Image (cartoon, rainbow, N blue to C red):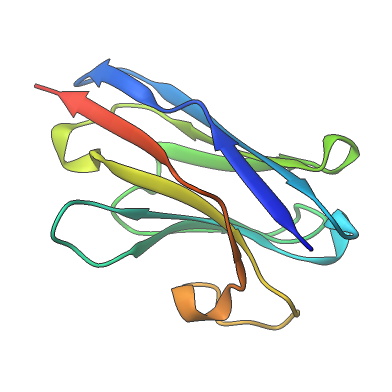
Length: 125
């Protein structure tokens, strides 16, 4: 059973930075991509970023490109999301996710089979 545990959320002022972590366990970590999604109140869960198994490929939602950085440390079976220049519109519960297979549509949350419990990020104005 794959388990994902996020940490690092909190309250930050607009313009500030925050780093999220996702600790994974339960299977070979390097074989699979990892993704970050977020869900704001009253909105659908949306794609934020993804990184390939070996970390060679990274993709971002247009809204966060240039401000957020996804990374992973396979030795620590962890993925990270570094967020900078945060604004109130980034307020959401952030989830890390992992698929059961390779070759997925990484922007589609339906492609991911395992999810963490989420970590709340609040950006104040």
